[in-house]
Length: 398
Ligand code: LMR
Image (cartoon, rainbow, N blue to C red; front, side):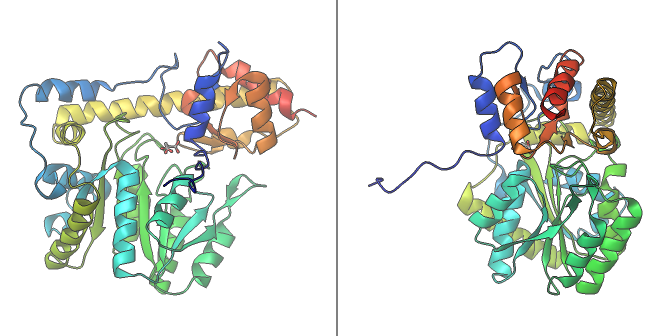
């Protein structure tokens, strides 16, 4: 039956973890997958999560969620993006559904997009999280791209980005990262977001935001949803995928939310029912425990405040490591400019290292990262940063 099935290519991100695990060197460092680590390199369970576990202990039934929706999780998630007082929350002008983290939210949206706009492609930034391509491809939505990052400046390619928005056919779907762009760590500033939003209005493009890092760019939850709020002020109907994977350290729990704004409550009800039907055929309903942890944290002012402090602490550690890595490279008299390490934000540094350099780092120094040169800064610690800087210097100095 399966003679014609060849092995699938390795995932460019998860494949890095496999290679790391297979390496027996005690010096090895995993800078591949974006997963937060403490300064000892250990995974972290946030105290707010422990607090929610205690609060929930023994109190829940284990029924599946009716119609795939933990209403409290969805409401809290939408408020996290748009704020508590906005009209969309009060007038219930959003269709929201719990999703299997960010990937699941994107997949549901891709399916929904194909169902109701079967001819429309999705425009993805260059570069973007590699899995975005898989998700929309598997939903049979044609994928187009728009320019985003400039390799020379290691910053935003704003002029080209605006040109590509203008030259896309009217009414196109665009995927945007509202903060802590993955993989580049390069975000538009507020003024640039305003220009982007304005041009979307002119062209009547649909903005779909994949928000996997709210809080992890600036350290502040509200600040990091600024881009979406700008689009909201301009009157866009917005799609938003939210993930609690990184921002609450719930990697294995797969908690997320997909929300789509609508013109009124009736439209929201119709859209939500379609999303529920899509989820029903794919996996029926999502797991409950992680979503209860999230809704408990967001619904409890003390746990929420604790969470916000813990987000700040994660960001502060990453920023310290950025500064230290740059400083170490500069102390080694690296002939290259490393300013972008501290200019970029969020979990990743798009180092500019070529695939050949990346391979060399793995072979000679047991340092693993994706071949596009993305460094997960969360894997950098006080005790490995000098070793990393030395290794980067060794492979790039000639
Ligand atoms: C990453 O980009 O490393 C994360 O989003 C994790 C993943 O699943 O790819």
